[in-house]
Image (cartoon, rainbow, N blue to C red; front, side, top):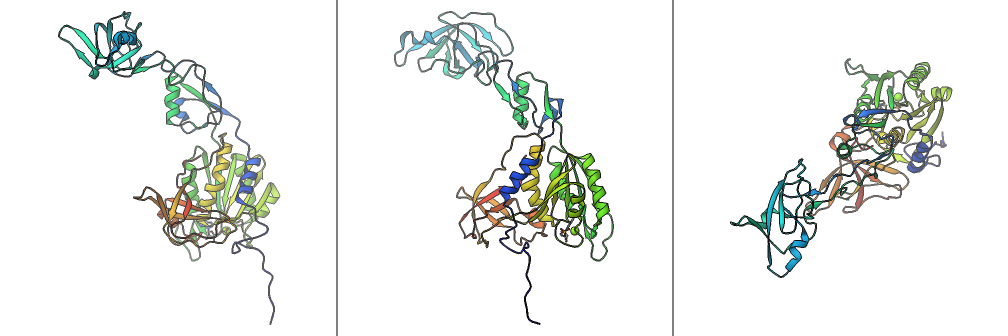
Length: 427
Ligand code: AMP
Ligand code: MG
């Protein structure tokens, strides 16, 4: 029989009129995601990695007093300038010693100096510290200093680090180790941070077996719940693992409703293609407001996004690499926003490709790569090998994603490509 079939667009096509761009998908996620509202007051150590929900101003200067950056002698600089000729030496009479943490009750007059330790308050009458190694203790008990110094040398001024009443944290800032130190230096013991978003996730698929059971023919072990657990565990979220749900409309429907009751974000894997057993679509249409997207990205083209009641829903594809790629690209920004964080892009570096990479313009291709810092001081990168969306070991072998942008027509050896180093804590 002669003839032809009219094929519908699929992930085998480079360009599909029904696809949306990665940028469009991201902006839709941004417009529909609402941050958690509630915040909790926690001891600052427990705020590490959390998102600040208030604006914090300094109530004091840090440091609180001008103090010495060196062990040495505190003097009045004007004493040195009395006769500023090349090689001129001024001698000072030492009248005391200022230690860190002590408040020396002494006033330094002209011709006098005070020995001072690092961190000690600069005594009254002094404005300059000459480091010990640049002085000479004479037999006559005087301290000799040459004229080769400048005003204010080795003095840390009050408020040099933080001035009183400056904003040191804004709502939406992520608290890092340095922030803990800054808060401590201001004597702040507790901070208001947003509560952690609750994320529920499940796998769908009749072929999935849990790892404590033997595999029957045609079955596979459910690996997605483990990669998802790993990626989520590195973020500041509370996790609910809802297990494996069979490819059945009613099971999926009730699992999704249950998940939406418990969580701010519900993530599923699998069941979002056009197969007979892909029930995510029908279940969601019944209970939520879904958008079904074909995104111009490889891997990870089919993705479902929407709401079930007040919860956000993201239906990731089933293939294990597509799960990790789409999680990194779409779920992390959504979680960042849910957490109340100010948007931030994961940093990328440019690396010279050590191999040719085939690609047609049209979609963003995210390959797994091995990046290294070359002896020439430039990043270089190669692919991990086979790039199929089921080849999860490409993620374990690699240390980065190679982002080949929509417009790219392939890469020649030596071309610069954009590389995003793996770091799931980037939120
Ligand atoms: P689906 O979109 O449900 O058709 O899934 C696509 C493919 O992804 C399936 O044929 C499986 O090979 C794979 N897959 C789906 N879910 C999982 C899972 N939880 N763990 C490992 N592989 C999976
Ligand atoms: Mg499936």
